[in-house]
Image 1 (tube, rainbow, N blue to C red):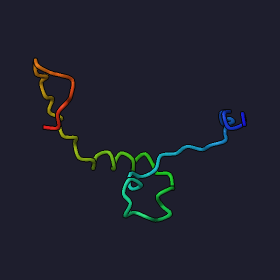
Image 2: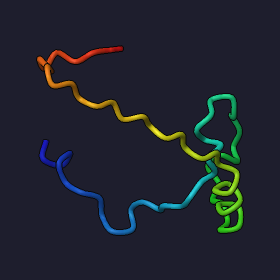
Image 3: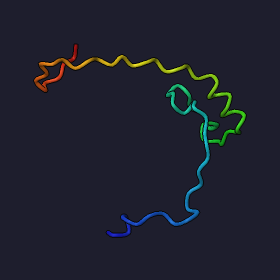
Image 4: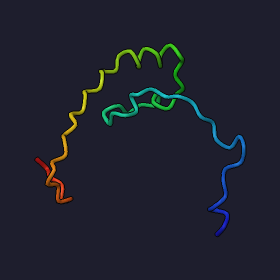
Length: 70
């Protein structure tokens, strides 16, 4: 049973960067698991939309700790 609690041996896994196409379920082809080049990675980074700013809501003075959805 303790075998399950041990870590991986050095070199047991190979890590490489893959395309962000893996994040969309509509994409289903063998190329999803292939490594991408630094140029492809940079192109994907440039295509990403910027994140929207999250509006921070000020806490009211009468906060009862219940939270609110509105």
